[in-house]
Image (cartoon, rainbow, N blue to C red; front, side, top):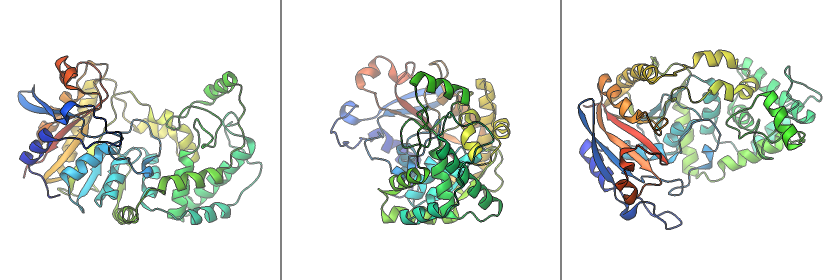
Length: 421
């Protein structure tokens, strides 16, 4: 697909019809976009409401199935990457999280640059560009020294059987030593990524006894109460078996071309662990498309959710938490996003795009999509519209005011900006 002009994008969004999914069901009658125009800071902005993608429309590659708080579905970046870029273009995410945008860009043959202030993001993202052979994963796991009876410096008995804990500690010691000596290879990094994701969860596919879903680790005290309430004790779980099973699951549906695309993108990936407001390592006018979803106000406590993952990887969660900006007020959030947008304008090529996802209305009172429009305009961008993907949207609902987004629906709202030539 050649690059789209603003007129092309407008026509495409207005006439968009979602392809039938596997069930043959449609949630938007007649499948056509319902556009309306809103005024933000004196600017008339077109808002396009439709079901532009669903989880069923194209089953996302299983390589994405790494849990992380506050992440969007892969279909969202795929929609904008295929619409607004060509193979070889540079795609960026300043708040990379679990790596959804970078991985989709890699799968689609684009070059990748990413950033996240939390170093766990890099640990969870970069290894998935280098797809290993399961046999090599198994051989490496068997070669890692195991020491019976190891115990962590903090009490983890409420999460793990003693033998499982010893296996985790043996693996942790091996990985930290390899990192210290700068000898971690792609296979080690893959194993570290999978193990980090399997530390705790709510099924036998995790190292721990039953606990909350893996995108958030409860405190030890809270886990003690969960165990008491459920009458459970941590059973033995083989870390090697679980890592190998998850590895096979992550890669089983990748085509040879997709694996090749990922490897090529991984060879040139630039992954920064820093503040999205200051990314001097990214060249001026180099990025064709940014697709991102920023942290929303003070809703998600990343460091608290990831304390166990930080421990496993030798990361000081308190230090990381102090670096993550807390934004309790909309004005605080807007001030930070303004600085981010100045930086995005610097690195975006002329004619390049920014797709900025701001989720749903906060408490149904704050229209974050409308809040971010003047931020992008102040930075020098032109706003090309607001794309609303609503999986529950119908024309009947539109009559009752859903198009004004004053009541909650299952939506994504993406503000689309362009840096003019």
